[in-house]
Length: 126
Image (tube, rainbow, N blue to C red; front, side, top):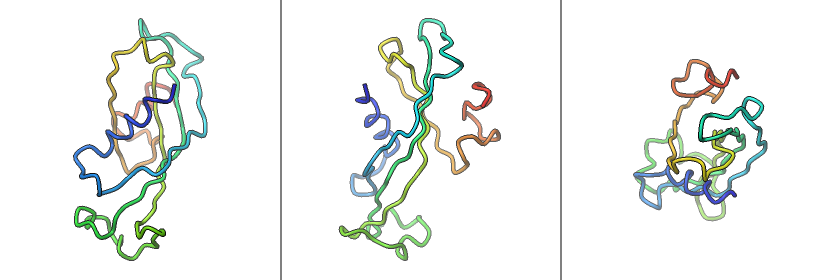
């Protein structure tokens, strides 16, 4: 059931070399059916997952020089800097009914910020 999640998260690092950063851990804290299970045509109902990602960045990698003060951050035993990010996923309850296409949006704003384009918040009425 969760086999799609690593693939979707891998998309977030597309275009990076393998040593730039890595997802260390994914935690889903809540899983809720959207709009009381309303069917959306042939695709069916959606669910909204909230959680967080634990990430690690190599401060010695020049690709990470754009991260402000990364060299000053505390490091783990491997010498990498760890970070935590919010995770919000809107997905079909039954992925077999979908087109097997994932889209994503990355924004520094909170995922519930109504001014963030393409956040889906207005659509869901959240």
